[in-house]
Length: 134
Image (cartoon, rainbow, N blue to C red; front, top):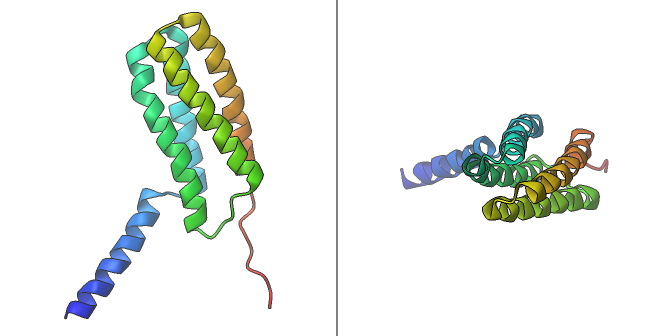
């Protein structure tokens, strides 16, 4: 009885990981929505809304990386660097928003937008990893 319970728990854990880390297209769609929220709030000086969405944005970017790994896809160095640049720009935006300087925040938002577009393209065009033929 204990072995069946243990196996059931392991299966539930694996399924839970796949639910928590959704497929690439789902994450990219959520990121587009979250990016729009951050972009709009930061550009208009809605500091509280921007600070609410920035951690969510960060979380989606990280979920994409882990989700790719779980699904057996490799994350290239190029994709990893695009993710690093995006997360760096997002962190810098968070500091600008905390300082509540509108001009600097708007400039940072433009850089974040550019980084997001490159990130999205890097992952949207990625092909799944094919197992080698032996």
